[in-house]
Length: 242
Ligand SMILES: [Zn+2]
Ligand SMILES: [Zn+2]
Ligand SMILES: [Zn+2]
Ligand SMILES: [Zn+2]
Picture (cartoon, rainbow, N blue to C red):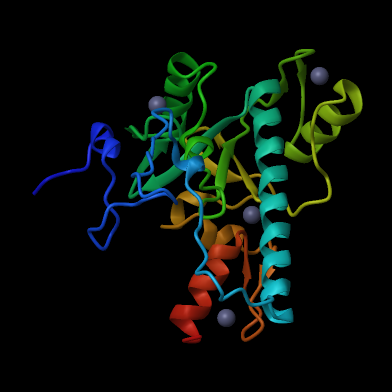
């Protein structure tokens, strides 16, 4: 097996094995930019097959763009919350353990995870920022003893925090999107829902309870609510086979 290296482009060969040539018969030199990154790749459309997008395709594209924008807003909100408060994210619960959003290490309880996150990851970006995987992951946020770190004021609840950050500090918070951040508190060894007195530890998947509070996406077959869109799609596929 032989791999094409950058030097090989001095003598480029097309897929059919023939040398590319310009009008005068001399081989055309191809040069690869060594700073090439994934964004540099372009989509090549087959020549002569340019079809105007149908209405359906256009609608799909618009709805995709809309989701991208919502996701971008979602990113902004989380970024602001993490930068301006002591709230700490949790990636997910793995069995009875809690995974760090930054390095994915697992901890026995949310308090240990919180200590680890504060000590080890100040100024880091959570992994879902790097992977831009927010569309697939619910962001769990530990808001125990929540406070605004700009003015050191104690704040009761995520909603109050975002209101405060926007109105008092003119922080970048988008109010027009569905809230996909699930807050929880850890008090006296209990993992508590912030919207009702439920102990979340009894649920294998915290989302099974949170769906009651976050009906962001509703199944049109059985009316079940979901925090994020990908969970609704997964549900429809497995339960309703669509
Ligand atoms: Zn970590
Ligand atoms: Zn403040
Ligand atoms: Zn609840
Ligand atoms: Zn359903």
